Image (cartoon, rainbow, N blue to C red; front, side, top):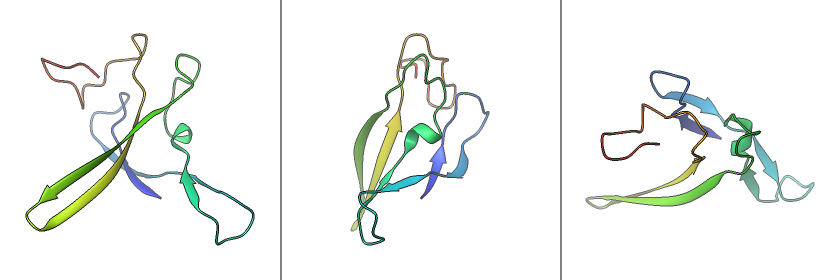
Length: 87
């Protein structure tokens, strides 16, 4: 699964491959992303939040799954932060 990673450790976003898991042993089963494979600091916050974002641009509709961690002890992410919001 190709995705874009906005890491707090990097100065710009990067295209990466996320691992997936299958719901059963057959190749026809549903596949689920494993964001823990890309997000660090599991000892600070072991779980990952997710949300679905829908973007409408004219007649086109784009859907994105967003996975993130948010904890007061995690490093600030300068790629996503602004003066009003800190991620």
